Image (cartoon, rainbow, N blue to C red; front, side):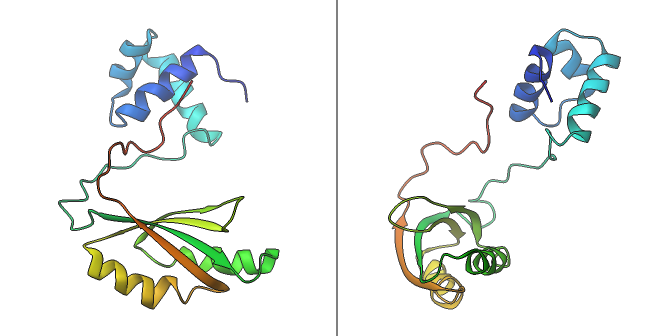
Length: 153
């Protein structure tokens, strides 16, 4: 799929403010409502726009503690990676999980209420994930920038 300047404008606007009405979106990108709505529908149907979600203040829901966890696996064959991936998806405190090319295999972003809660998640869930041989935790002192996926085009 080839995206033109209007498609990119739609994506930029929605990445910042996902609850824009089609009328507001049309005004911001310089098109009328009907072609904007058709473009928006096409972007959704073709999987460019995967969905919409609320940004939640982690302090309001007792999830402001962030730790990044390096994971080393004992086995990196495809079946082991799939088993690890499936198990990670079952742990709600793991906000992100990335397969890494480097000195470790995965990098996890974990949110919890506090360090004591994180320690429990690490001991009871993360350390028992399939094929985990080592973990290394980096505790966040301050989140300087957290914006989620923002377009860079």
